[in-house]
Length: 233
Image 1: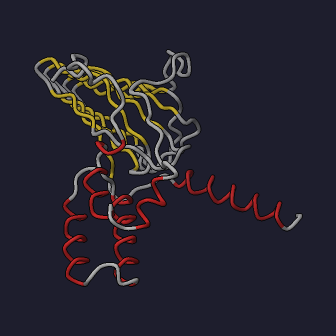
Image 2: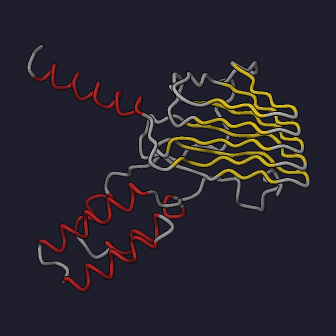
């Protein structure tokens, strides 16, 4: 499917209600329902029915339906938690030259573990397989571009589930598939995947259970800094 040939209106960022729900979104709604049960706002049967619906919900909008009549939903609405991320990186933010190339010609090439992602990575698979696993990578920059070319080959990309993932590319008798992902962290890394699959496959999706520890480190640093300022240290 050629993702560059978009239908009218598809170029704009999706509304929050249309975004795919994450496990964190479901947990947030489940917590609100649990509190409503404890407060007597829901009966046990109503709570069980709504929790089942939450587990089966696909989008953020479907989740919000289950708490629409609860006070907690309206308190949360006053403070939007998501800022749309554009489908392409900021012009001029990413250099044209790659920090690293991963090439597989009639072979396989793998990049995984604790490694520095850099700002731009090029992946080429010609009658071969390239695997890029960012689930344990160190993100030194917020925006990371992965340029892919697959000719009779396969490029597989895995990212942590608390980053934002965007895709812009196409396939020529091949498959170019990027699972759009949106992080609830405003300063989370954004991974942009583009390129072409010519009689081959390019696939990018989150790796469940894996998160970017760097994000948590930054959050803890901010909290620690605020506490030190509060106590005058």
